[in-house]
Amino acid sequence: MDIRPLSETYAVSPQISPDDIPALAAAGFAMVICNRPDAEVPADLAAETLRPLVEAAGMGFVVNPVIGSALTMEMVEVQRAAIDGTEGKVFAYCASGNRSSIVWALALAGRQPTDALIGACTPYGYQTAQFRDLIDRLAGQGT
Image (cartoon, rainbow, N blue to C red):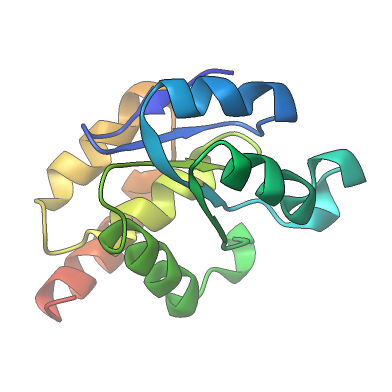
């Protein structure tokens, strides 16, 4: 597992497996967000297969499947609610970490400068820069 921190309290990675869950708990994560649709993974990696393992390790679990071509504000709001509702570090995963970084940047629009949000994702090759205008618009709406 390759944990990629975007901030002190939020990190992303590609798809996790059951074997990764103890390491997430040991790293101090309080919440795990699954941003990968179950249709993309085998049954042993499906969200509802991982949920009881994550919860047994003492972490919360939120399912927020993000389909890049069908990204909605509801997905952004679910991500924001999970982040805001967690005391402690949040870990999110998808196929590569890219979708988890995009919904994070959109969820934090207006809370941090757009350049800082994009800059946190750039070292990992995540495609948040293409969402600059949307991040700026959301920031202007006071989200």
